[in-house]
Amino acid sequence: MPRKSTKKERGVFEKDPGSEIWWIRYYIDGRERREKVGRKKDAVDLYRIRKADALRGVKLPVQRSKSASRRWHTTLSAS
Image (cartoon, rainbow, N blue to C red; front, side, top):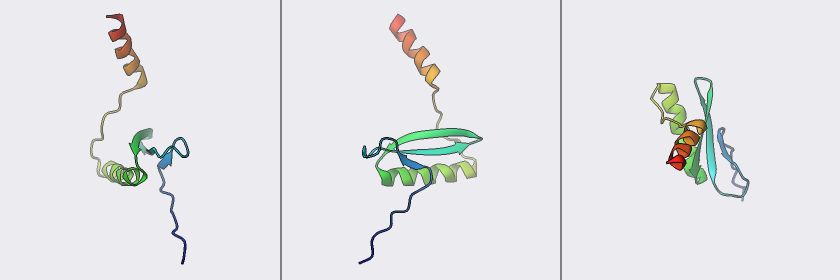
């Protein structure tokens, strides 16, 4: 019986090998975007959706910057 070939999907990766938590990485307007997804199949499906949306010009979810999150956290801590 022939082996199943597992084709690597561009833009889908496991940040920590063996963790079974998959991420997607894609570029929009020259800026890298990454999203934590979970299962590999879900990551592949979401990657394809994001790439198609980018090509159609659909507005993607807003990503918060790390510095904005830190400012918000420090504001709460100071209160």
